[in-house]
Structures are given as C-alpha cells and as structure tokens.
Amino acid sequence: MMKTYLDEDADALDGFEFLTMAEAGEVGHWSVLKTLNQTANSSEIGDLVEWALPIQERHYAGVTQTSLELASEEDPNEPA
Ligand SMILES: [Fe+2]
Image (cartoon, rainbow, N blue to C red; front, side):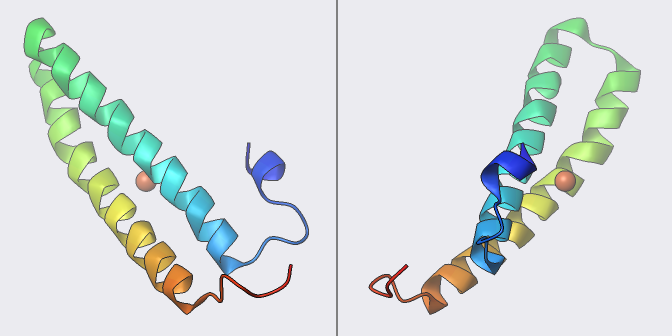
C-alpha cells in the first residue's frame, strides 16, 4: 500500500498523510475489537484493547498533528 501511495515525488506531507491513514486504520481496528468484545466479554481481549487502543490513539494524534502542521506550511498555489 505504501509503495502505491508514495512515489518518488512524495514529500514529508505525503508521508505523514499516509501515516495518518494507517494510524486511523489501527484506531478503527482496535475500536471494532473493543465493540465486539462488549458481547464476547473476554477479559484477555479487554485487557489487550485497554493496552493497545490508547497507544494507537496517541499515534494517530501525533501523526495528525504533524500532518496538519506540514499542511499549514504548504503553498496550495505552488506549481507542481
Ligand atoms: Fe500505530
């Protein structure tokens, strides 16, 4: 997926946009697992979700913040 999204012209913002999408996917995955476990009621899965979900939320917040900082520095009118 990364090779499809990032070509040789990719810049830092492109890279962080990719990371933002990847981390959003991880947050989504662990959130789905958390919801599934509300029915399954596994303490092992519950412990794993409690450990992993905040980590992925931090990753997502960090890469999103950097993406937005880089985006704010971009000139949208700059020729490609
Ligand atoms: Fe992550």
